[in-house]
Length: 370
Image (cartoon, rainbow, N blue to C red; front, side, top):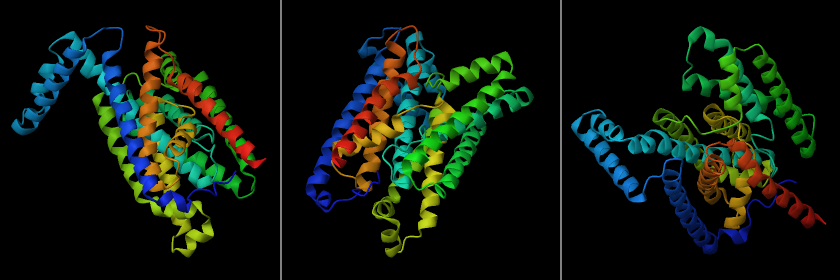
């Protein structure tokens, strides 16, 4: 199951670049469509004309605030002008933007892990990384919340990052003894179950309010997003995406084998550490803000490579991030509107659409081997 076909000579011509341009245009159009649908769809029906007018006024006031030094006074006046504007600016827009940012981060994290393990079904959820982040966040919340009160997003991200690194380290330790990648994935799944068991054990001794919040958070959701979350997640995830893109050439060389990468002067140990840190940071941001979300990190990179018909990292990385954003925006739209006013967990929807992609991918690889 190794990814030896990571870079093919025929994929480096103009055809691959033009296909990339068309694919990016399609993804951007889908992203714009998804953003409009998310703002326009909900339990409160707001005419599209009013939405565009309010969004335009909000942008105008934001620019005015920046140049006049009113520090958000004009924008705050627009947001609180009517119930419809409060719904758009305080609920729907932060939620859809957070879904786009975190969806892209989760997809890119899966791509980096697939590159690292040279396995197409490696991902934050399958390897237990999301479960490890969930475990440490849960323990931190249970232990610190009674003493410190509300826990900030910074503590949540650091806790999730620590949990992600803990599980990655455990999987890497097992990889020194287990050379079979299929067995390594099974070990990752088992480690994830152990982390979930530890989390459930800690929840048993938590207060009733902590149990409710942790249970709701662990199901996965973009609800409760605010502009502070969007700003922090945006800086971290987009920085991680840019750093990943800057590693495109080493990633392409590494996909052809460690020996080939070393022959090009790449420090493999340092490069592997960078991949682990970046993938852990991206998945930690997602888990901290939205809880564990399944199958995005596995399915979206495969969808992207199939769409581009290339595995060149310099093209796949930005397309994967954008495809993950589109995927999660539409999944979140389905989660909150399919059975409105009841909202489904985002992981339920991503599993429903992501799992068939993984099954198809595995059957296709099995057919190619025969």
